[in-house]
Amino acid sequence: MSTVKDSIVQAVDRLGNDLEQLSRRIHGHPELAYQEVKAAGWLCDFLGVQGFKVERGVAGVDTAFRATMETGEGPTIAILCEYDALPAIGHACGHNVIAASGAGAGAALAAVKDQLPKGRIHVIGTPAEEGGGGKVKLIKGGVFKDVDAAMMVHGWDKWIGHQDLLGIVRVGFEFTGKAAHASADPWQGVNALDAVIQTFNNVSMLRQQVRPDARIHGIVTNGGAAPNIIPEVAACLFYVRAPSLEYMWALHKRMIACAQGAATAAGCTLKVTDMEHPYEPMKKNGALLSAFRANWKALGIVESPEIKDRLGSSDIGNVSQVVPAIQPLVKIAPEGTPIHSRDFETAAVAPLAVEGLKGAAKAMAMTVHDLLANPALVKEAKREFDASK
Ligand SMILES: [Zn+2]
Ligand SMILES: [Zn+2]
Image 1 (tube, protein in one colour):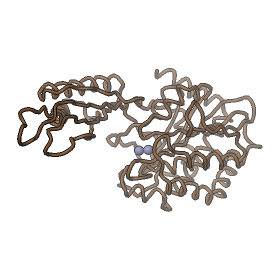
Image 2 (image 1 turned 90 degrees about the horizontal axis):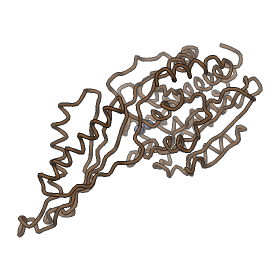
Image 3 (image 1 turned 90 degrees about the vertical axis):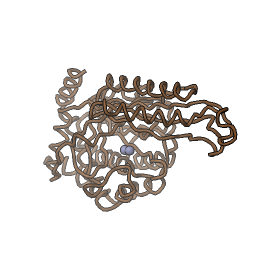
Image 4 (image 1 turned 180 degrees about the vertical axis):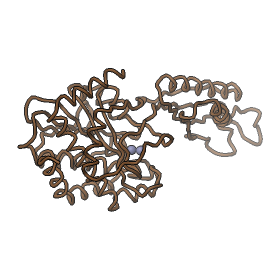
């Protein structure tokens, strides 16, 4: 390992307690999409102390931020932090670790600033990953316009360099019928809940016909007011995911047909609400991945093979469609722990998660160093990105 990389590793170890505290504080105050005021504030304060120039609120998003450090003309590399929590189960996606490791990577690079090759480093705070599409807003706001490569990590129960991500579109259905007493005058009513239930039945039939790597899942968001009233209004919300945008939109169309058929069967009217910001599939970048993997190897981290059937979605997918990007998975929980579970929430501040945080911060900082030291690597990443458009 080069002496600069040695210094990066030492800087992360030296900052270990601060980073753990930062991670714990965010975990202890879970904030939902676009309400991450405390988390964004703590991260900005931390990066400011490390010597970054901090912009609080970027692209019109109050809880986004951009911290910048420059050493001269050279590549611009972005490290992304997520810090939003989930409703009801807090930091069960471990975004506290993503945030602290991104800030830690930035801090380690600041610690070796004098020895850094020329370039610009952004640590970008990207809110609302769990629905809300923070990164989509930042892309539209031009935040990635001058970025040459981007990286972030995500917590998992294994170390894995690359995992595919599915595209996702969210679609809501609201059915309107007619209220009536459910016992005295049921024949006067038009049952909107029937349309919701029929939609689920239609989707269940559709499911047999979809490719195995697509995912359709939904919840009832309004099931009526009381059992003795024929539900006048009922609603449901579905997520539709697929490995390509084409297939995702094709399924979206069929989902709407399922709801239309259900509305017809129940005699209701249907309002379709397309949620904002579809998330795009992840575009793989071998050049960035190889550099990152070499650093994991140097740190003694042993990677598990890619998992083909545990597929999620993220707005890092959208970033990967506009600039070369990677999102390696970092082991922060015992093997077999599902994400979005209460066990994962507990694990996200346990000692294993602290190890994960440090391994992620070190490898990201080392990879940024590689990219600044070797602009040909940035060019190679871009060439690969352009070729796979
Ligand atoms: Zn999540
Ligand atoms: Zn997540």
